[in-house]
Amino acid sequence: MAGSVTTMPITVCRKEHFNAAHRLHNPAWSDEQNQRIFGKCNNPHYHGHNYELIVRLTGEVDPETGYLYDLKRLSDLIKREILDTFDHRNLNLDTSDFRELNPTAENIAVVIWNRLRPHLEAPLALSVTLYETDRNFVEYHG
Image (cartoon, helix red, strand yellow):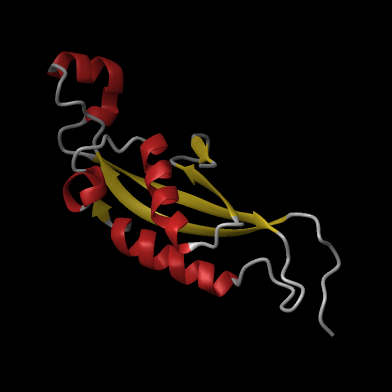
């Protein structure tokens, strides 16, 4: 039986995990200013995080499938565009996304959003939540 119980917007979420190292550093600043602003996150030998990523899609349920979006497709997209690129990498050294961009949690969330957005149908709203620690996280809605 086709159909859905609602025509109101609904949100589906996919949670993923990746590990990555980074260094917060502005090359235009002195070592002292970088240390003052970024503290231990400016370690010249880098430091790592166990990131938790939540990707949310909001839209209307397809009455033929009952899905907003096939979560297996979303999982495959996140793996291809995010995990395969960032997991177990040094974001500053190993990724082109952060060669010239400081890999703060805020910038990482925006980069993730920008990597996913072109692969999703226009009516879907995309939101990214990135946990850098259990208590520190950012959200980006595009």
